[in-house]
Image (tube, rainbow, N blue to C red):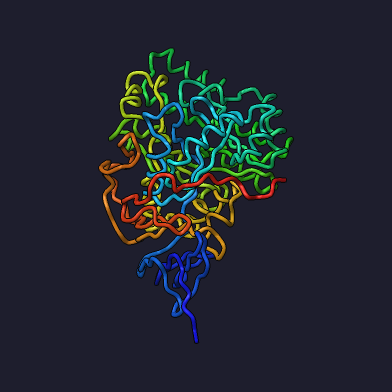
Length: 459
């Protein structure tokens, strides 16, 4: 007599994105993991079934650059609102950044942040920390996802307490981080050149946000800092992960370094190539710091995304209130910049898939697989495979909608993509076999998300 097997969840009749291909099959989920991928479920039933005919299932997105603002700046965002925004956007795992109050720069502050997030998160989470000398090994042992260094300093969010400009101190820091085997993320900037170019504008009475943006994305600032960072990575062997990769000359340096076998990877944020001059004209500094890139610079980013030079797409979800950003209209050097991204970046990128600017295969690589590898969670996360966590995002690649700032989960309540037409929408976000978002509604109670430390064996 044949026996039926009962699973926690079956996703039926879907087109499943697996190993770079779309395969029609059912996904069997049990105990939070993928138990099977099959075309024969005649002997299977489930506590819950999702019929996904005509839809595509991709791995849950892994975002390795989120500023959730807790502790210290919770009027902008917190672990509950930020992770709900992530769930709404198809993200099942994210890692937040250390520029909070206090900064995440010790085992103590890391443990405090873990405790804050537990009980509030709707998706799984980790934490990047600042590599204070003498503390890196301890923070790695406490489960840090990796380390984050700013080379840019100033008013928040560019907190000088998590900034290292001195190359000698960077050398010592990279040596210490190298021992942990964890990646070191760096926001590159040559502050001396930044200050000099800023003064050029100040001397002619300009402190407007267009002038600031021209300085902030200046090619020389990134070329200078990244060339130095690559030299330090060669010297120390640290796993270097470069953020905000949008400089043509920096991209050329990174491409060459990767071809030479240097342990370096790069990330770009959606705002740098999905927002442009028209957005700056329409919504002003809410679109910053994008808006001044030439067509060839944006094309260089797309080329680098598609050829592997840039291996990670991450949001830099960095919410500020509209009132805070409005300060830039009078003095941009005194204003914070950044925008909420988690809820809409997948739809924006699926729109580009429909335009054939990028393939679905490449989008999955840069937003699921490679981020998961960066933080030592692959193949637990970032892939649809038997034994992996059942982290799934079900998308309708044909559905269209207009993005609005209504019914947002991010606390600041606005989107830089307001009024944009998109084609491609996440319908379900499934975390460890549990539906956490269905048809734009987050349906899980805060606290289902778990702190998730790297599983990759350290070098």
